[in-house]
Amino acid sequence: MTLFSHTDCPLSHAVRLVMAVKGLPHELVWVDPAAPPPDLAAAVPNAAVPTLMERDVVVYVARIIAEYLDERFPHPPLMPSDPLGRARGRLMAHRIETDWMAPLQSLRADSRQGHLRDALLASLAEAEPLFQVGRYFLSNDFGWSDCLLLPVLWRLPAVGIARSALPQAIDAYAQRLFPTPLFQKTLSEAERTLAG
Image (cartoon, rainbow, N blue to C red; front, side, top):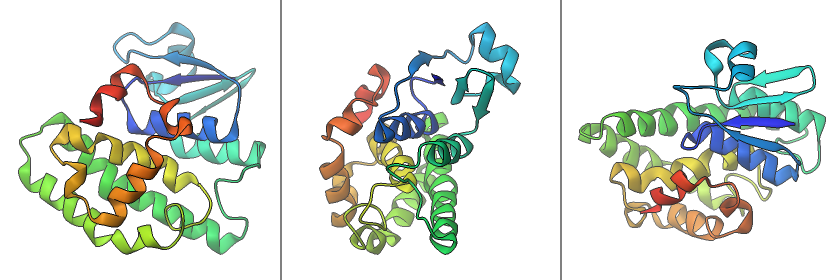
């Protein structure tokens, strides 16, 4: 398997976490969006990253890659086994992408949007009870939501949100998982500088 990944993109980072959780051997290719590798440009619209290639299989869009890998390599599972649990997991992943990741990306593009920073912090604070449900985010098992959420929390200092400003349960979650070898081995050199 080959994973094409941006050096500083939360969705690329999320897929690298999926690969690490599942212990999947792969070749990691760092992609400069301004000069994508020819094989990626030929196989995927707009040379989108992250993209997973394996023989004749080409899968792109982080969520679709994660679901493909979770179905193909079911252990450890990233989604619950029951339909209702999977639906709830997908809804939470959607919330992470729209309510937290999208504002984060907007702030990274233009850090002068103070109102957006305040709204992002308020939205995270509102979700603090969700961090108290289990050992991981809404669960006692590490899952797809954690893979999406950790790259968002890691990048907060880069947009002027100190982790100390986060509610206690969220900060404790981040401080417990960031030092783990699993998380640390998924960081690019560019991402290591974002910790603040």
